[in-house]
Each structure stands twice: as structure tokens, then as C-alpha cells.
Length: 358
Ligand code: KG4
Ligand code: ZN
Image (cartoon, rainbow, N blue to C red):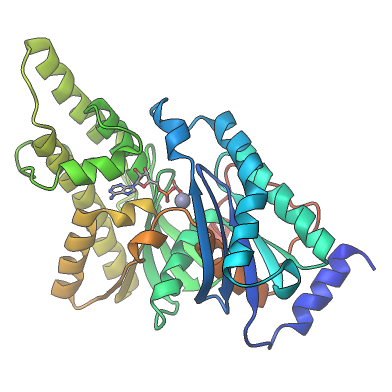
């Protein structure tokens, strides 16, 4: 029997099992992360090895350095996740890995690592979409959350408004035409002299700033009211900094930072409001690295309270990239019978499921 046949049969046999344990690995960007999760919700272990120190020097992620660091760390991080869960490879039911989107070289290291382990252990393999993983981070600490809901996914690479119809069924309602929200935060932060990753530091230094000190544009996309465009906003912030520099004036980073975060969150809140009104959804969920932003969390909570919508946010430690979210989504893919073969490949750009069927 081929590995693929055996894997399909195992997945079928485990269909109604309680206590399904998924071991997952995430290597799409600059975190090598592994976790063991039971039934998609219960975290048995979650190990995150961040490469921030390696990339800080360059002010951003250097793809080859990231891939090489994953190559060195993958096995150790997976071992640690198993050990912390008190398990051996034989004790898990299936293995999940991020297959995209992300840095392709970085993704390939994780896919190859898990493919080897799945084959060696004779366990089913599941390829997980990273964005869907971010959505699933919400299941880890919100036990009552179930689809359908409306999700704002804001990360370093993506800004999507997604209608989550079911655990493995998504429809993208809005997307960015240029920079992602996190990317826009990072680029502006870098221009303000803040270290990598900029969004985190921008949030921190802007806490005491005046969010109305600078009037920044709120770009819209003609004919696509749910889509985003952040590059004009970023350019406006860069122009303020450059003009001040030329005139020998100083810019208050807390004030510009707070104004910038206000403008980004204004754009996010406006689209979420419109999407909720269009779809009639009364459950709003945040996901992705930028969902850790303190202003976004506070303003989204205020908006939802005012509208009578229920808001779910991931716990701070699960906003950024982690293995637990990949294991959570992997569990639901497994339940839906979505196992991968040994030809599983990594893809830099991977649409969130059903997008093409819109
Ligand atoms: O989801 P994530 O960890 O990686 C990607 O899938 O891209 O998101 C990383 C992004 C970075 O742009 C980072 O600056 C941003 O999330 N980020 C934040 C905050 N924490 C992380 N942006 C604003 N405020 C934060 N507190
Ligand atoms: Zn991510």
C-alpha cells in the first residue's frame, strides 16, 4: 500500500475519535514554531523559536538567512514540542505543516521536515494555509467560537476581510491592493528609526502620542469598498519625515506613530463595519500579527460594543506566527479528510480556500 493510501485510511479510521492529537510545524517567515494540540482546541505544547535577533541587523527578514535558521532549528523545535507535551512521535495522530503563503525557501524547510517525519512514522500529513491558521488561533482560547463569523486577518503579508463560513470554508470579501497592514506599520516604523519588527515598537512608542497630531490620508479603492490600500498612507508619513528632515525640524515619533496607527485602524474599522453590515454577521474576529496592536484591539472592542456585535480576539501570544494555530487548522482539515501526499510542495502565494469560487 502506498503512503498516500495508508494515510487516507488512517484519517478515515480516526474520523470519530476523541482526543485527536496533531503535531504541527510553522516555518513561513521568521519563526520556527511547533506545537501539539488535541481536538483543535487544547494546547498540549507550543514552542516558538524566534529569529528576530538574526534579522534585526538588516531591518527586515532576509529570506536565505531565515531558511538556513529554520533548517538548523526544525528538528530541535519539533522534538521540544513533543517533549513538552510528554509524547513521542508515535503518540500523535497526524502531522500538519504550513504549506504557504510565505517565503518559499523557509516554507520548504518545514514541509520537507514534516514530510520526512510523517513518512518515517507512517502518519498522515496535512498541509495548512498560514492565513487560515491565523484565523484558527482564535479557537485556541475562545472555546465557544464556531463558524460562521467575519474575520479581519491583518499580518505582515496580508490584510483580508474573510467570511469564515465553516472551519475549512472561506470567502475573501476584501483584500489589500498594495501593502499589508503589518507591512505598512513596519515600513513607517523603520522610517521613524524604530527597530525591526516595526509594528511592535510603533505600538509601544505611540502609547503616549497624540493620535490627532497629524492628518493622514485614508485611501480607498475605487469600486471596491471592502478593499484596502495602505501605500499612500505610508508615503504620506514618509513625506512628513523627509520634509521635517530637510527643514532641520524634528518630528515627534509618538505623535506621528499614534496618528499613523489611528489612520490604519480607521481604514480597518471602516471596512469591517461595511462587511458586517453587508453580510449581516454579528460575530467579528481578529487574526494575524497586527491583531496584537493595542489600539486596534481597543477600538474594535468599542465598535463591537456600540453595534452589539460579539468580538473575539486571539490571546496575545497566539497573534503572531506559532505552531498551535497551524495544528488547530490542521485538525479541522484532517476532520474534513484533507490529507496531503508525499508530493506536497510549498507555495509562496496561496489563496485562502474557495477564493477562486467567489
Ligand atoms: O502574522 P505575523 O506574525 O506574520 C505574518 O504572517 O506576516 O505578523 C507580523 C506583523 C509584522 O508586520 C509586525 O510588525 C506586526 O505583525 N505586529 C504589530 C504588532 N505586533 C506585531 N503591528 C502593530 N502593533 C503590534 N502590537
Ligand atoms: Zn503570520
